[in-house]
Image 1 (tube, one colour):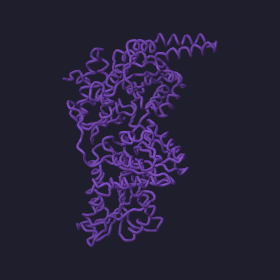
Image 2 (cartoon, rainbow, N blue to C red):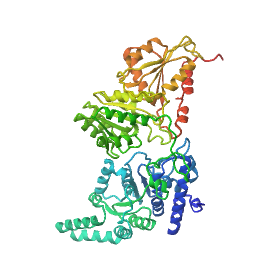
Image 3 (spheres, rainbow, N blue to C red):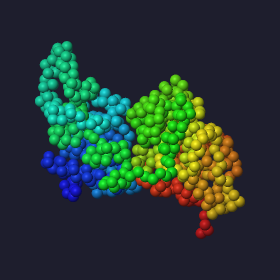
Image 4 (cartoon, rainbow, N blue to C red):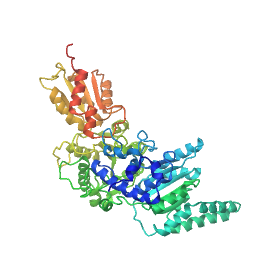
Length: 630
């Protein structure tokens, strides 16, 4: 496909000049370009293939960027990026120095709100709509939210607020979990146009005016309208929130989308449009398996995704294997995920233990308090949740789990940097925000085997625990099938400085690195070059204060090392322990700086931040080395 029309689009203004027939051509070219672009870079595919027509229709009807479009989650905005001046930068998608995989306000004026987490769009769009009204601005505001994101309480809180305020707001539900059923056809297209048209709106308003002095008749009319619409459309719940519900309509049918959006653009008050799309639409392999094509790596579109050869297991796979083994050994184990079955490695667990598996949808707060309730009844809940998503349930973690000292295990996947997904998904803050909570233990395994053993250690406790581990593979250590509890709060010395301690410019100084998590291995590599001691601390809380004091007394300086934020992190815990013990010793803290880390290759990012073996060595020499003679 030549994509000739697509290459003439430099901004949405060009889309608005196209005829209806040209919009169909643009959709075909955009889908083709999107498929081949993502196949070269990797990224979200299924969800973006499903929003091609909806994106075109929105930019054709609305005067963006004056009119605001707020995308929920943001993993369905690649067509939006292509149409808003970033087509020629798609080759840099999710790469260091390239464009983000999510909307970012600092990337484009068309990205009205930065997203990455779910269910924020309606709240943000409502704020924009109210802001426009208060400032006398005549603009339309649209929130596009997926059906999965509607499972979060925040979305319903926003609907409740928007419905009573009478603000001009359009919420579009992109329903991609159901097929295009018979009601989504010619009759439904006609009904959508009718209900979104001015005649219908005016007739309804006139009826309300006539009947307002007869409340019983007005209530009867309202109920009749609601039930009449309910016979052909599933909109009653949104009508109860105060929205005018329209749909469902085929989200791939531009002949339905464009006129319906044109009608809705002129209506006042809160409007709700229900569109039905199909993930992976237009690419048969993705349509057949939208989960596999949700976020693929590079692939050949003609051949599709190929199964990779077995290799070192990822930390996620280690967790999934442990979860099944632990469930086999202890019938009290129940596992909970907030809509991340595949991402958290729970597919096999669901297959083998379906009655003990709970996917609560995108509802992180509920997942934590639900686990607390299970623990109250003597069960042993394991909440598998990404580190970045646990942030959304912080109050529940403190109030419902920790204060009651309930034995809930939090398996925190994607701890530390996550690479291509960037700042919205990075698990940089968990050590800092967890270690300040009473009753809660925080474990930081260094490798795959230690991850398995610390998960077992956590499960055996009678208080809340968290085990944090990164995305991807470890160093490839052998994993012991048996499960052995590691003494709570006890680290280990993995390397002792030898007779050449402090070589290579350190002038005989004995220095110990206290490593938390997987940075143990680059620490050991740096220690070999400089002949340093290295401790695998294992626990950020309870910290092994005895080991810290022992190393402080036997060394001239300490280095703390973590793949989390420095402020309030594990290094801060070490400094607190030294102060409590009355030990004064130079300490170098290495970790993530007080800034949001951009997206990019994790290895390159860690090198850039000085957290690879070479960077650790350079930082130690810069702080403790003896300057060369002038």
